[in-house]
Length: 152
Image 1 (cartoon, rainbow, N blue to C red):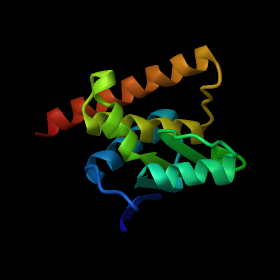
Image 2 (cartoon, one colour; image 1 turned 180 degrees about the vertical axis):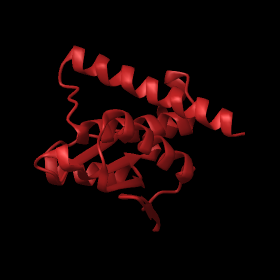
Image 3 (cartoon, one colour; image 1 turned 60 degrees about the vertical axis):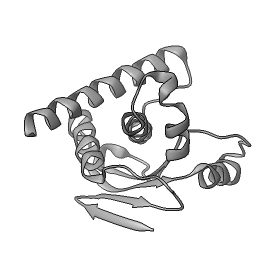
Image 4 (spheres, one colour; image 1 turned 90 degrees about the horizontal axis):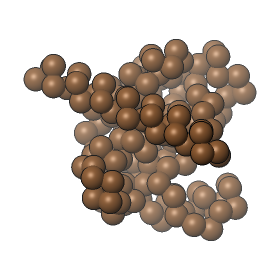
């Protein structure tokens, strides 16, 4: 397992044969936190595989199926800052990115944003909630792309 941390955000790669540019991921998640007006007090993002996410889904949510991302809030009142864990299934991102016309990295980054938005309090349990979250994911991915383009 590899790990990188800073400013309340830890990114770990665990049980994964794939990875992401963690500098870009860190930048993206700080963009989300700033825009949503939340502090990443103690947030861990774990980049992992199908088996790990499925095991967590079974153990903690009693769901016996694969999913792209899981979020576990460790904060009762996120107004003070976010504490939580986000598990991103990199295998799913690799398998499904072409289906959405996205690169592997963009798809995996979308999952991480989605997970952090759940920590902030967004819910995709309804059609309007799913639309709202998708709109925000798109917005933050565009902002990252623009920022990276401007930096180069």
